[in-house]
Amino acid sequence: MWLDDFDSYESADAWANTVSSSMEVSEKFKEWVKRASAKAQKVRKDEKKAKKYDMILSSFLVKIILDKRYDELVVLLTSCLDKWYPSNFLLWVFSLVYMDISKTIRHSSNKRVYEFNYRSNEFIEFSEEVVNQDIRKRINIWVEDMIDVVLQEGSVITTKKLLELFETEKQVLDNYFIWIFRFFFKAINITISEQKSFNYIDFISWELIKSYRKYNFENSLDEDDNF
View 1 (tube, rainbow, N blue to C red):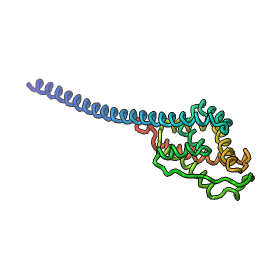
View 2 (view 1 turned 90 degrees about the horizontal axis):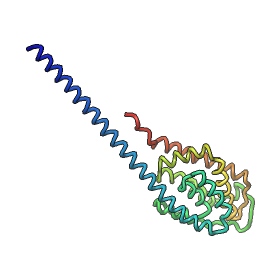
View 3 (view 1 turned 120 degrees about the horizontal axis):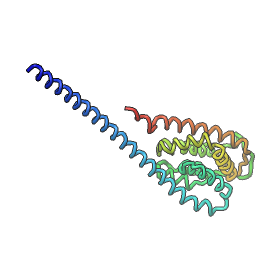
């Protein structure tokens, strides 16, 4: 009788442990499914945003290609696209010299549209003195927009890819950046050298990289992989 009771007790204890273990596994599985689902939704959201900017870029590419003024820039833009730089980022870079892009994306992001109409009356050499408040504001907004397009319209996947490209294909982007920068000043009758453009672009690039790294660190898709 005692032996039977002992066997029953042992079986009951084993069953209880099994049930407890199953419940624990079940809860962990539910938590994993919940997190996996959240990540899947974020990926779909990222893809949706990427498609949104791809469509905007496509619509503007037609206009840009047909406009002979931008021929030299189209070649550089295409080079960046060939390296798989994200379309939203390339759009913002180009927006410095194409205000309609800036207006469209700022409007889609519910941001105030900035009007820039400054132009020097004659061709002058670039210097700190000739960079007035209007020019400074335009460039500052341009840089802020390139940061905000990641922070506010953020995509972890896109940002991670962008950071990788900054390390492996930065020269292609630098060329694109520099020509955009010089084109902007040329359009307002200010001549700036390639070297001075590079100095400014190098500083701007590092500001972007710091912001993108911070965003990517705080929003990494892999941060909750371990339970």
